[in-house]
Image (cartoon, rainbow, N blue to C red):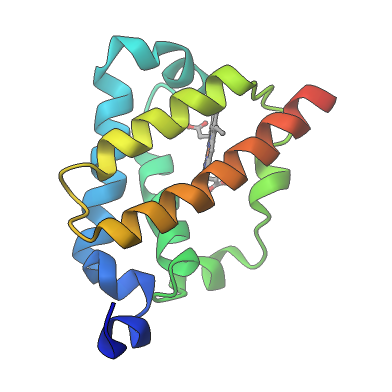
Length: 134
Ligand code: HEM
């Protein structure tokens, strides 16, 4: 990693708006078309159009990019939003597997991919724990 890499935000390293859009699109395309992810797919609305837009907006903010989405939303708590969905270890693992598949072949920066995966694992685990408690 050189100095220039350290100065960049994760959003920039992912390729900015184009990269974030591509990741969100690929993630839901994979979830929608892979039979192994059916249980996860069925937790979502039949039409994925809204969650595609929201996930893209969230990723932009989360990765240090433009904050338009959160400014439109006002406040947003990722954990509260996922509470009560009944997320189990199994559905959290499906989400992580679909996301890994989406990142593979798209995110060329291996360090970034690992950092994002680690962060997704922490979030997904916390969501599953909370799901179990409800
Ligand atoms: C752990 C497994 C997860 C499951 C089972 C899950 C499931 C869901 C479901 C069912 C929705 C509602 C969308 C719809 O009804 O179509 C949703 C929304 C969303 N999820 Fe997840 N999710 C998971 C993990 C994550 C993670 C790790 C992130 C962030 C990195 C995330 C970000 C979002 C965002 C931003 C929305 C849109 C919320 C909104 O705009 O109100 N999810 N998720």
